[in-house]
Image (cartoon, rainbow, N blue to C red; front, side, top):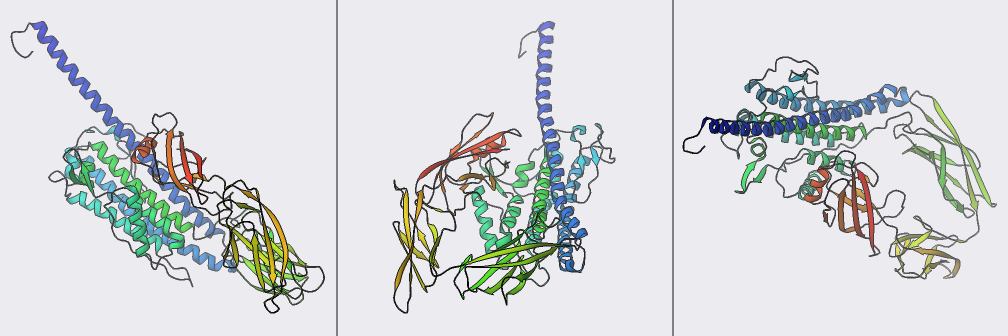
Length: 589
């Protein structure tokens, strides 16, 4: 075909070859465009889920308000109404930016010659299925778009057709509004004041450049800490950090072999087909709706919800079980679970003459009394709490105090064993003496009102501790009790993927892993991950690394996993005992 005289047959064959080549190119292009349509459809469904997740928090608070009746719940109602008011402010801000992003989508479609005047739900030939409603974005059907491969219009609309480094017009406006929303949402989440309580407030600054996910996390945590002098960081810091990170994009991106530094808008929408550009805007909406859900859940966490916030209630009295004649004893009497806005009423009916009850607070009433003579003293009383209908729920309580002569007692707050290489907290009391000493066959050091026992790793299986009392006036000491304890190695820690323990459902976006004890192990210990390996069921490759952060290779493998796949993380960890252990975590995706 390049030259020379061709027969009609050769010309026909050449023409058919050109047509076939063009058809193959069109099929590849069509498959790619349809892939973008499928991606955008999944993002829209995810946006619906995120919207419902946030709405659930609002519904729970509304239901709590509806059932918090009676004068005794007046303070709680005011608190709930305040929370709902703050939730509305969050939704007002969210609705504005969601609508703005929808307008950009519609502008792209209109300028590409698409029909976007009518809405017709579930119609295969119609682009617009459902109108946007508050924070809910417009439901679209991009399969009905005719100019799927149009890329000039998205670039023009986003203001990058002339300069990818410096977007103008709508693109720059989208960037500014996205960052402004981030600041506003964090401030609406971390700034509040309940009636009669201390006010909290926070202002944030922009962080749009970072070298890695870990670097972003550190910068955001440092910024929140620095700007949060007047915030409730003890309860709110995790919410504030996660909301900020969810709404953060890298402003300057190094792209291509030429290592061009492009603005995020320029990189994202450069020669982006129409359907891909709309998918990118829907992805921004997903970030916004996910952050909104976090913020609303933070507000919900500040109030109690449910019948009693638990399904069963019972009386509980606890305190000092042993006392000497003439000692002062204080009991804590409470419901086993409680509502901080609905304090119990505690009464002492018999067992201690002159017993007094301190006004209940933090869900408990304090009973104070003096121990008499004999071998034991039994107190009886009632504890009552109102449900949200104003009905009293009353339970009887009983508490026994054993009265003893001066004696020694040893207790381990964490466990009735000593763990090798671990700083075991030990409390010892020499009743009847004003000074207590503790000795034993393991290294001991004084710590506050107690001791720290740190058995060294080795073959030993038992240790003894001896408590002695000393009268500082007479100088007399007396050994009161020697007790034998088992020595055990520290148990293996559990592997956590973010905040999810082994067996739970992880997030593809989570890049942090931890080794720590769950609630079933009552020890406080820090573990270092020296090595880790990630495998995904059904996929090849076993990325590995060290520390608490997953590498890009591991994150990429996880992102390829199908829904329902098992993510296995095998870690080598070292704890306070300096002994290397292997821990395994399995998660669903």
